[in-house]
Image (tube, rainbow, N blue to C red):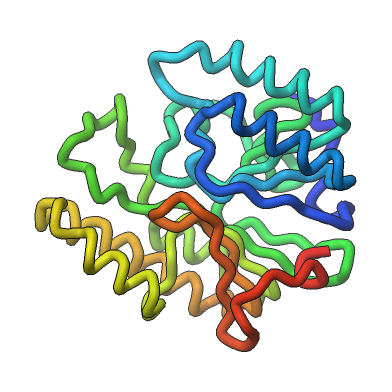
Amino acid sequence: MTATGSGALSATSRIGFLGDTHGDMQHVLAVAKTMSDRGIELLVVLGDFGFLWPGRNWGIDIDKLSRRLKMTAQTLAFVDGNHEDFDLLYKFPVADDGLRWIRPNIVHIPRGYRTVLASGATLAALGGANSVDIGHRVLGRSVWVEESITNADLTKLGPDHADVLIGHDAPLDLPSLDAWLAATNHGWPPAGLKYSAEGRAMFHRGFQQARPRLYLAATTTGTSMNWSPTAPATWNSRHVS
């Protein structure tokens, strides 16, 4: 795969973020148009991209998405969540730039990836999460062991501070999210809750390593969240410009 936008993350001045897309072509294209109208050429999906999935014509879908993005001169990047076919995803090699190019304008950001944005701010990535509904899924068909963050992922991430961290799971000790989870988790079996909590604890270790000023992720509600230990939880484009 020859990447036409290999410097996209480090060279762009504006980034548009999306929550879980789960292979929803119409949603992605609608958001891409909105972003394009605002002059945003780089889109980042914060996990659960979902276009690489068994039982669907993923190659046709990816090609269509790539063609439509080409028409608006946009690149789409994504961190992995817990709803990806990792067998398919990992068939694409990591290029010399540290990214996994699916198409010339569609790229996966591996766990532990780091770069410097155009503003000089540092960005790191730590995708992955443990599926709370793992008991309802089939290994190798609708869930993969690679969804879990590993010690090797944390080693690759390293201990250096990052101004911005992007991922899919949430760090610990977020009162509003914790309250929502407590109110809604009663429907899941204890084994699934335990497995999900273990994954969140692993992500929190990575979060503590990176110590970001700004964290961007897709929450369990499917919406984007911004969180910073040192600043109000509000969007400020200067953080990622």
